[in-house]
Image (cartoon, rainbow, N blue to C red; front, side):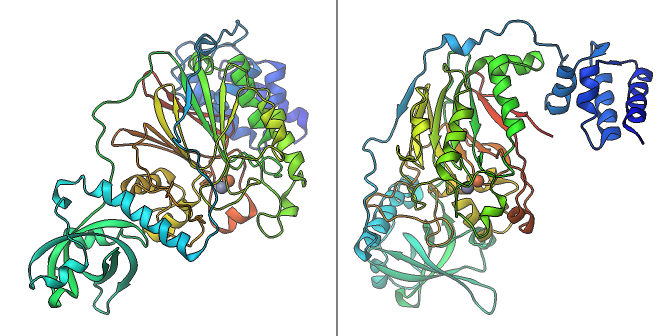
Length: 502
Ligand code: FE
Ligand code: ZN
């Protein structure tokens, strides 16, 4: 079919449905390969509108194709003036790290011992808040007890085995000793919970002494968990926060067109009234790592790079971010593709490599993880390398629902519980990956899939990506959901996902 035939056909399709296509909209539509399908989708959407437009402009077509809202909202042209509400609101950002991390470990054996002691102490403190663990014994103390004595302990899981009969055996340590824990066959609850235990996490065990203190038969496993929030933080100002990550600028798969559409939306509020209102209320943006694709991050990366120089990659990021209106504050934290040490906690991006970003007045450079109070909201930002580890350690979890994996981190009160897998941990004297304080908003990234949930009052968001599927992801069977922006309304606590791509 010639392109003229295609034009004829599409014009007729719309006309017979009662819509005229503006020439610009027509040429926009003709760029679609699956034209018939797109036309069908459009007409279906248009027919559900209360006020149907007669002439379809390019903006209307674009908005419908990219929108996520219920189609009952009338699409309007947004040629009217755009006066953002957020412009009138003073920003309030406070970095919560009491003491800036020193990032100074040398990684000696002593450093590791100190690190794990600190992890144990911090999580033990949280576990001791559980009334049923308050009288927990030390592991060495069990030796003096008679068989069948009921006890509770708090320890770190150093080994997990399954017996020939299918029973789980855990090796648990505290500072006084080590004990083997057998999950009781009588307790279905304990059996079920045991499926979720992972290496190196600190847990509480309730059980009875056996074999003269050599064994503990567990009837319950207790995680530190996150208590239900009594009161939700809310902002008085009508502002929103937009969560992004994993731009991977420099990659051939970086979705530049979609990102530019996002920039256009921020600057002009294009879209339907609801979308325009959201644009007008964005006061903060967080970019949780992987700003660039990096160089030499994985084998054969050169083949997938559009920009092969790391400095150039950051220059390109800055060129994009400088188009964000300056009344919007941008928080940037690094990820595993960024040019900084990969072991967590990661320091903020260094000045020499990310110089053009430091020139932007509305940019705040923080480490990974970062704890920051944004307009009264305690926000925990973590790139999320450990999501790889936790999704492979616990059956039923996957990167396609990263928010569920994030909930597992909240239950464990630790951002990277498993040691020595893909998430590299630097043994700093203080374990900064412990979730001491419960955040209002918990953002992670890295999964390249958008995910949203509310866990016991914690708004839990995975911010997806702005990169389409890579060859590697294809081999892993991972289908990203890129070019979507999760937005948290700080006034109503409502969350929305805006789509800027297909
Ligand atoms: Fe990434
Ligand atoms: Zn990543």
